[in-house]
Length: 509
Image 1 (cartoon, rainbow, N blue to C red):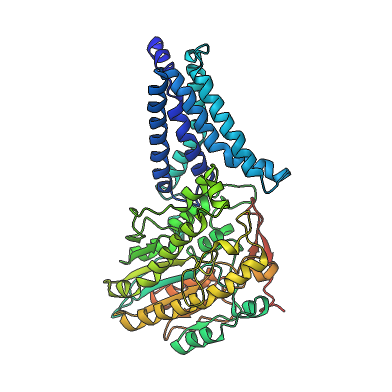
Image 2 (spheres, helix red, strand yellow; image 1 turned 90 degrees about the horizontal axis):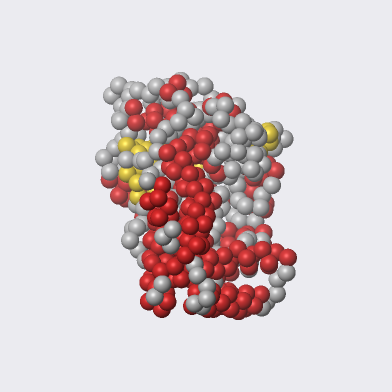
């Protein structure tokens, strides 16, 4: 048995394994930010490329071992270009650095080819150690990916059965459709006016005229999107939900599971609600376990965000820097498609037989900035610097134009829902945190508005997301849940559960 195994291990399979490692390691590094399916096409393309190279070099050298060596060397050079560039650029960056590196990489590729063709060199003895090394490289990302998949394939004890509210349908009443609309990073009206000189009074007037209660002093309960959403969907502070949320724990799985298997959705399902959610591009907020999950076609040819990130680790980044390829615009097109899918689905959702709970997470006015004020598509690249990062001035410029577009589309969506819905309607228009570059209490100042006709008695200016669904359930679903104190908590990265209270200057001047 060992002899057969050793014989197999001496076969030159390491180029195939090497071709998988860059994709799997990048997926593992971005767990929770992208879905695992985002890397499938990259895996297949990388695998196919390694096979093609093996066949080409096998025909050239008439030797499988030589072909394997050259293929592995070329794959290594291709996938390490970006990482080496970043390391060098951090210490020494000139306008010609990429050109110099491309020259060096071409020389190294030709040397690898020459070595493979040199008959004095033999590569049979290299197969076994290189196979072992390549297998070893794959173990770590595979363990991470498999364990993450297992953890997210089933509910965990972050949300216990005792935390799921006991809902019931009041006699002779029709259950309302509930829409939870979350425009990402949409700041409170007073914050936008003071920080960016963005005047949203017209949109606020629309909401009030339509029947919304606007919580003028609302703050989010947490300063990070995941934490804020996890708390809101479970109607509780994370610290009170589970010992998993402690300062020493760096694991994000608990909060992702709290979002995916929340007390709100669990409770609504017990009284017959169907759940609806949308693709966002961020795996932690994509409720793919919903009864209806809406996403753009998976068969489109454009690159996804993960593939773009992978390409930037390769010499392809040179084409982008020279203006021959705009990867940022390709990524922006994906954002536009996902955003418009949410807005364009309002009429379809209103016509669905209820009752239903619809989570509409809109990644806007959050960056990238892909719409102008009228909703026309724009290139997001000019809002970022050479390192694909935002400066405060660039961010505010893009944010200022994207807010009017979001307002316009929210008005259309809300009007469509109100006019076309055949059931009673609840709309929570509530964001997760304030805009980027805000600090202190400003980080928590959020848009928070409630459409609950005839059921606004429990609402007040400083209500925070932790109490939103408590009010909804008390008003429509027969509960008597006490309202919690409205508290905001900051926490640093990576110790995201190391919470410290932040005062609300609007309610506690």
